[in-house]
Length: 196
Ligand SMILES: [Zn+2]
Image 1 (cartoon, rainbow, N blue to C red):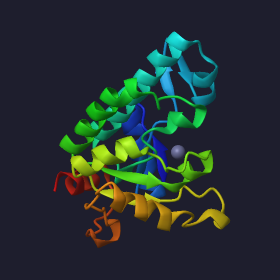
Image 2 (image 1 turned 45 degrees about the vertical axis):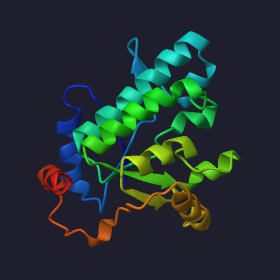
Image 3 (image 1 turned 90 degrees about the vertical axis):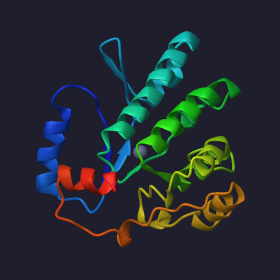
């Protein structure tokens, strides 16, 4: 189950209740929205925003990703550079924010996916970019290859290509979710698992 992380008061309590009912096999944490100025922006809103507002929103997007990492609620984080989908964040100026984000992820011992849906964008790279994948390798962040398939035809799409790229950038740490011992699903059990 892929879930959006929200930092507002009461969200995690509500989410915990949902987990008790849904009992997902594993949780993928993501940020598809940016909360700012009392508004919730999606990727298309970011695309249509003015240049200065775009930068502010993208900055907040990465803040959100770091907050999701710090929450330790998720088995792994989804598409770290999602906003490249609308053409944002590939500029070299974002390298420092990416570094800070990967450092936070590493400090909190969070896993990250290589999302092969990124290949659909035509840059010949998955989510996240080669620039971020290099950082993940450098900081020994465990990765898992994931398809984000929205239909059955896309299951395991691009896995061979993603594996090749992972090896090329020097990733040696792979997250193996099904080798971890499964405890009954609860927030506490996820946190304990992540703290190991
Ligand atoms: Zn997503």
